[in-house]
Image (cartoon, rainbow, N blue to C red; front, side, top):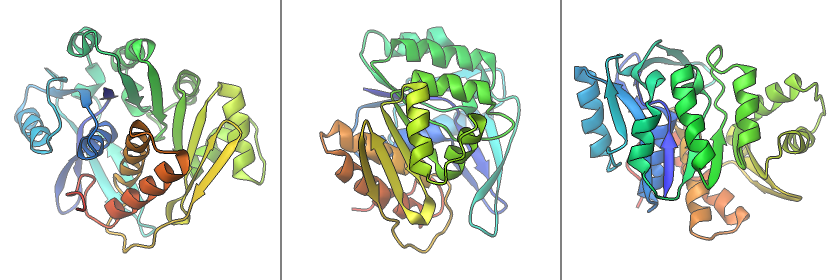
Length: 281
């Protein structure tokens, strides 16, 4: 089983509201790809919380791990820049800042699981504790960096890097984390290898937008080119990429084929509005 833990939010665009949050996006795509998935998050005891649970169920994602509490259901105001990259204004506090570890553990029970987690949901010590309790129990940990300053400080990122076997980040995040460690190599792959050694990371995946993506697994290097598409918005494209990579590995595929499949679905999602569009047949 793959457990995706963290924030579930409504992305508020100028013209529409879309249910999102990286953990939900990843869980949705994993479900579409045939994986056994659970999502652990928290919504409010408010009208939006009820709508959220109904919307998650409509996506065919199990809702058993969705908690409810007094804080308001999370929202994020999203604008798209001229470069087609999203800008986020994350409302604080939100229900997902208070994920209850005991409820999460009761939901998972005695099942073995792999954990997918990020940085943002660790901004509050309550959810941070819940996430770290689960990563101690998980058989395998997959970390998607997703820097969202000022909510994703260096210490939390570095602790998360050290906890994970598989890490995904984009090129800008790779370079930023490299600067934290005073790594200024002109070749990104050299920065990546230094980070893998520093944090004992087994697999590091780096996305580069329309230039494609690449992956280091031990001493092996794999690369896939970008897929040309008419971009609608890029929200959730990285989550689709990450989910597809994980699903392909669950299905026993090699890293190159997994990377190629991930790039294909990531490009497809970028060509559609919203992070959880209907999947191609």
